[in-house]
Image (cartoon, rainbow, N blue to C red; front, side, top):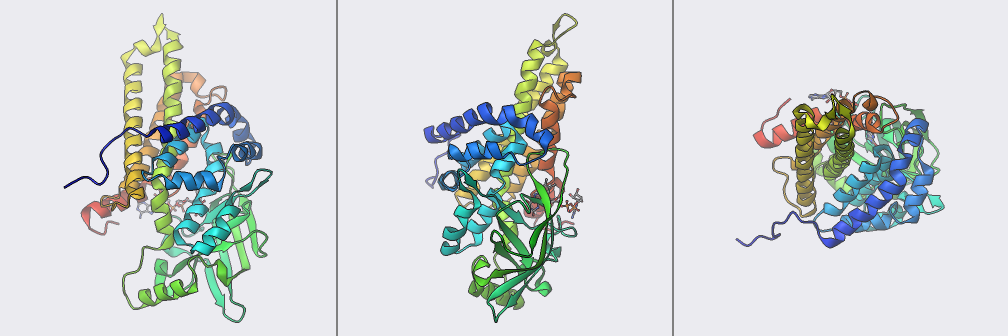
Length: 407
Ligand SMILES: Cc1cc2nc3c(=O)[nH]c(=O)nc-3n(C[C@H](O)[C@H](O)[C@H](O)COP(=O)(O)OP(=O)(O)OC[C@H]3O[C@@H](n4cnc5c(N)ncnc54)[C@H](O)[C@@H]3O)c2cc1C
């Protein structure tokens, strides 16, 4: 049987060119700004502006990266940005979650209307947020309590509820909110709504102070009789009604919108984790060559050299899993063994492990803010938590490989 896609692990010249371009920005602009914005715990607007000015924070860049038929361009770009600084990378990439949701569930008209509004233009930047998680619905997305009630007379949807841990929450110009339209159907009764800029009834609740990725804004989003036009239901009413009717009759329905969005984005989250791991590994390698104790560079001790060998091996293995999942997603392969989840699980745990080892290799210098390694250690941890915790990834993988309902 002829292979549809000849096997190669060599990125194309175009992919390498994008990676080099993002790397240059990460090295020149992002890396030097990492510490400042970590300490300020604020969205780094000047950096976002610069990213927009060069075309990196833009719908064009995202659309072109998505259009790469191998899925690698976005993975490579995400790794480079996070190599610069993960908090700033998330500030730049955070709008992408809402973009994916609109792209996955919206009609052509909705995509054309809303996608440009997720980014804005240089000098008039916009942010977007994707709000699923709630105080009582984190890993258990089926327990969402935010409701969307249809007001037929006005052709409006009325949203009520509290969302929490939302990247760009409340600060965003556009929110995509996942809500329950029929509580009896559990997760099959979910639908996604665009809440445009300035809609009364949406407000920011608490802003969270975090362990890491502190340049990325995370907050509660409160929805209090928040009314949006019927046209803000992603996919449209007809499609929703048909899906609800199938769910009520017990017929299988398409995987629910939020889960689809998360699954598609997992390798790209893994790619960011690889970026942190690579940054920490490179820093530790150079440090170990320079730092002299007992009359020789510490790298000349196997304890240090072998640790670096393991760091490099795991980080390369993580990237291969990320690339495989990105490629599978983009070329429409079936994730029979939850390969998207495998990539996110492995890459995130590798990032935490590698960053922790880097702190150890630097000794006291790894524990203080003069070097970025302590920040990378803090930043890495979120990757085992958001977009599905490590336990949830293992649940998804074990169910996929066993065909059993593992609890
Ligand atoms: C910085 C940050 C940014 C975020 N951004 C967004 C965003 O933009 N949009 C959004 O919608 N959400 C966002 N989240 C939410 C994130 O996706 C959730 O925090 C995550 O899904 C986990 O939910 P939880 O925090 O409620 O933990 P819980 O679900 O309460 O889990 C607590 C612990 O129990 C474990 N656990 C739960 N169920 C099981 C089980 N069945 N088997 C074994 N272990 C289990 C978990 O793995 C975890 O260790 C963000 C979170 C953070 C911290």
